[in-house]
Image 1: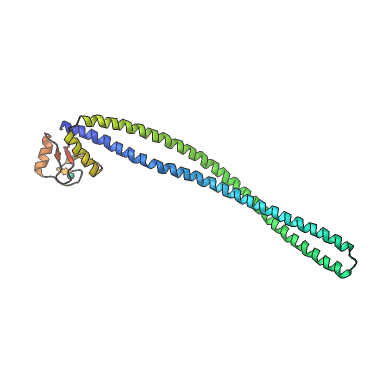
Image 2: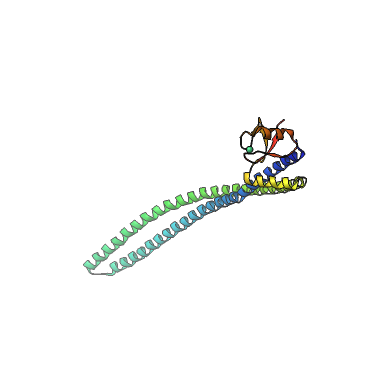
Length: 234
Ligand SMILES: [Zn+2]
C-alpha cells in the first residue's frame, strides 16, 4: 500500500472518532436539560399539593369562624328570648335560632368533607414527597454521571485531536486538503477499499484502468464516480 494511504487511513480513523465524540458531546446539554426538567417537575408537584393543603386548611378555618359567629348569635338570641315577655316575639326569635342552628349543621357537614379532603391531600403529599426525594437522588446521580462522561469525552477529544494533528503533519499538504474537502462533503469514510473493482464508498464499479492504478499502489487514486480515495484490499 502507498505509504500516504496508510497515513490517510489512520487520519480518517481519528477524524471519525473525533466526529463521533463531538456528536455525543452535542447531546449533553439536552440530557442536562432533561434532568433539570425532571427535577423541576417533581418539585412543582410537591409544591402544588402543599398549596392545596394550605387552601383546604384555610377553608376549614373559615368554616370554624362561620360556626363561631353563628353560635355567638344563637346565644345572644337565647338571652333575648329569655328576656322577652311577648309570645310572638318569643316565637320569632325561636325561628331565627332554628335557622342559625340549621346553618351550623350544614357548615359542619362541609367541615367534615374538608377533613376528609385534608387527610387525602396529606396522604397524596406524603407519596409525592417520597417520589420527589427519589427523583432528586436519581437526578443527582445521573447529573454526576453526565459530568464524568463529559470530562471523559473532553479528554478523549483532546487526545484524538493531538494524534490527528501529528498524523496530519506527516501528510503532503495537497493530499491533506483533498482529504479534508472530501471528509467535509461526504461526512463519513472517504478513504475506502476497492473490492472486486467496486468502490465500497459509492458501490459503483470503477474502470479497469482505475482498478489497475489502485492495485499498482504507486499513486493516490480516486473513484471516478464519487471522488473517494481508493485502496486495494490484498
Ligand atoms: Zn466511489
